[in-house]
Image 1 (cartoon, rainbow, N blue to C red):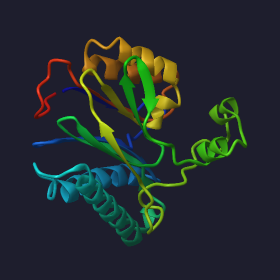
Image 2: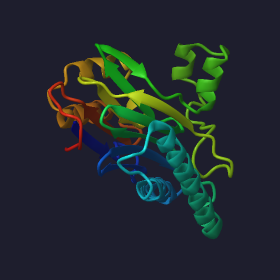
Image 3: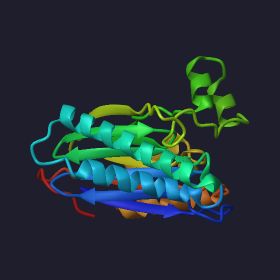
Length: 252
């Protein structure tokens, strides 16, 4: 696999509350998180989520796990991270209300499992088609899915940033878990809404189709978001499976 990653504070925010983690073993885990909360609490929440999930899941994943086992391990890890964030907020009143999105994928050979909560996204480019693999857990996305607003109205809705599901906001965490086959020449994009609020799917598809370097493409997406205002932190991880690649470990 070829991997490129970049995170940026943007043009308006003083603190980057986005975070990412790439973990390599006999498998790979790729994660992006978008923290929320006053002061530096969003930054704390996103970092806590990534580290907690990696530690909890990494201690149980091994060479012999199957997709069903991985899903159970990730579910347990997500709940553990949620509990830790809520406990931290309870013990630190200045961080009351802090939380974070978390979108990740576990990959071993051609098998993958997505775990997702919030409105960060994971996309797949396959055979020149771009698929959004995750569903936004946001008020506006729910209104659109129910047919109460149009796609055009969703783009400019005043409550666009209201999240309905995230780590740290409810003791009962509802996350999505999605199996995925990772085929040769597939390209994955994990990104926060600082990217997707300013770059449409057609533009994402064009960038991923014309990829020559995963690192350069990740940088190009972040630069595009900043050129269009950079109103939010932005993070992108690009994972490309090469046609000639043997199954096994990842590198970047």
